[in-house]
Image (cartoon, rainbow over all chains, first blue to last red; front, side, top):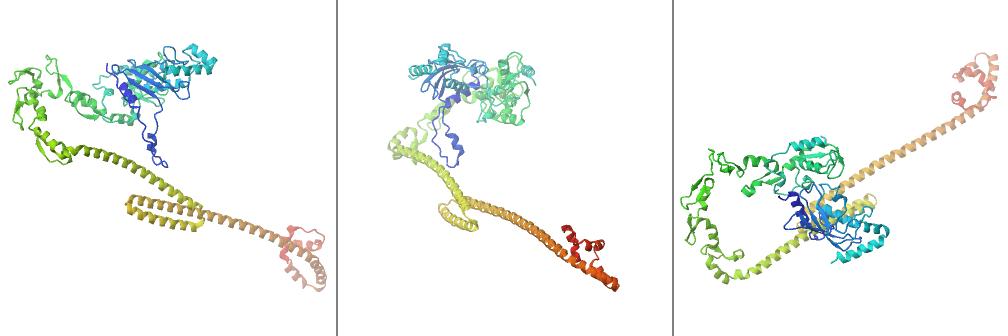
Length: 173
Length: 448
């Protein structure tokens, strides 16, 4: 089955993303508003590369967001686009161990847009950004890993401390 | 149209189009707003939801069938999740035209068609005009396909084999012409340079490697005029000074290129700075004008500008930046016009203020006049009051006199009391007893 055009395009865009910073442009008295848009830096910290033998299977790495217990860590994930993508959501799983109330021991993620809130207008990029946002804002009220969520509710500082330790041991090598 | 209707229509219109518009190869980039958020291609038969989001008809149909819970009347918009119940097939013509105008390659590029046409025409191109489309052989018993351009006017089957007279190979009739002219292995030709005879189909490769072909020295772009046989070129290249100096030229060229690039950068920066400078200058000028007092400083400022303009002009002439001068003069003109505007504003302002003052003054004067009138009247009254007893006395004396002296005095009395006739008789007699009333005074004043 031929790869749909949409997947090809998304892949191209994902691969084109990590560009070098353009040299900082001069903006004197707003003389060049065009060049201002050039200096928008790449903040995402997201990287997705398809497997050579199966272009529906991606190796993903997400940088832990700043000011979160996962800061400084690089988390690896696997992403698979089912045959009826984009009508059904991609299948995503954390490969790196992570201490998070919405991610269980097997790396499965509890995120509404990956389940019933999926929309075909979403893309790989936006989904990965959502996951990065989930790292920045854990939601213990809708848990997947019950023990972690309970600890997060009972003693948040200790839970955050554990998350930091896990990040250091598993996501910084 | 509501959702079940739409789905029914969508199921009906399972179109057997020749070309999948989503798989096409686009020649140039297109505006990302023309991209369907679901298939990421320019819209194909766009439809619109209530929230004004547009999708391809087919994309929306499959999105609805997979996402919608069974038979609910609503469906969340894939872009904004607004519940939609109706689907509008009316999409602005502009959008459709823009999508149909995007240039695409013929999908039969792999078969040899190199046509580039607008997307709106690709169906008809493939259907009617493209010569590379495979159509069933006109001979129904044959069952093979043939390219459209190979069809013969007489509808003959071109799939029968015929034998090439030279190489004894069986060639299909539709390929025979090509075989006969180029591909037949027995076809031979002579290389014009070395004189050897070679098979025609290898001629191209031979020309690239033939030792006798005359070719220029590798340093020809640096000025070496030598053109000799390929076999001898190695010897020449060892001696040619331009070849040995070649790498140096290369390095220089790359250096020049990078310098040019830097220069362009610097030029851009310079332009930006110049713009900024002009901005500063104009702000300064405005500021000076605003803080100056009255016309004198404005004139001074103008003179200043003139002087500066002259200086600029001369320096610009020196650097031959005529565009800058024009721009400068234009800005000068602009600022002068602004000044004129300001002055006219000030004039109207002054005008209004003057008329206001005049009116105020007038009112005050009128009031004063009224006061004066009142004062005069009261004085008049007093005088009358003072005069009354005397008149009375005079009248009484006159009355005595008239009764005695006949009709001489009534004439004098009549002339003096002609206006208030009736009060004449009672007034004088009551005059001294009556309190003074201001309202009386106006009329009686005429007596005096």
